[in-house]
Amino acid sequence: MANENLDKYMPMTSVESGNLHQVAEDVHCFTNQIVNLCFVGNADNWVLVDAGMPKSAKRIIDQAEKLYGENAKPKALILTHGHFDHVGAAEELVEKWNIPVFAHPLELPFLTGEKSYPDPDPSVEGGMVAKISEFFPEEPINLKGNISAFPEDGTVPGLPDWEWLHTPGHTPGHVSLLRKTDKLLIAGDAFITVKQDELWKVMMQTEEVNGPPRYFTPDWEASECSVAKLAGLNPTTAITGHGRPMSGEDLSEGLQRLTTNFKEIAVPDHGKYVEQNKENN
Image (tube, rainbow, N blue to C red; front, side, top):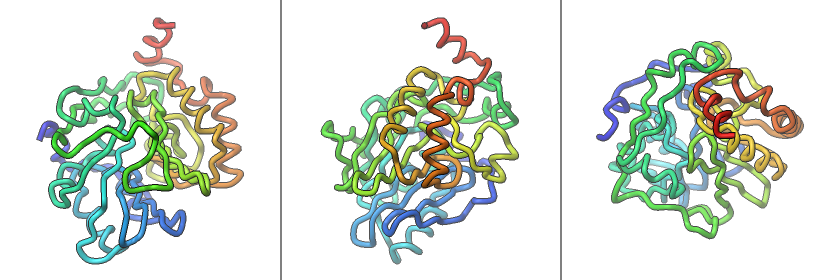
């Protein structure tokens, strides 16, 4: 394993941990400690979007079998990005299920053992989660032989009604997934519905539309563009990487507020990546 830290259980949790939300007839959001992953499809054809926290493979497999039956196996694993809390069980799941994995081409170096993410920034303005982020893994996992880039035409393997959208900022190859028929959005960490840097709000899953996690976002200019791009799609429902699924006026008003006031709401007052962004502009 390229990232030995992903072989260690991380004692982080929330009131939603272990809960499954049916967001649409064929879309379920499962909260794995503090992060969400999605089961999309039916028993005959389904995919897993993101792979949760380290040491969580058994919980994900158990949930899949509750939804789809004994020995349920997805057609593919789709990754919004490769941060530790979204790929924690990826290697173990891929080994068990022998399935293909898809991600944006700019994300592949972080998923094939070639390149590490920038270090988390514990100096960033924010709460306790931000302060302990220096202990979060940033090293790559290695899915070589199983992982491929998304098709260039925007289609999502295994999900014919969905399209992938490049939404960088949080990571270079971050993607979000949209189903055009009902405007259901799987946003990853492009924006989230909880203030992820504050421990109490993470634990209680206090609902509020926010930018991506402050301590792990190196490119705020790209992030702002990505949020505006997603808000412009007018999604009816959003499943984000952190926080409860949100829909209706709560979502539309929250996204509008975030888009209009991105620098005040999302961008921290200080932090090394904030300063780097200023220097580059």
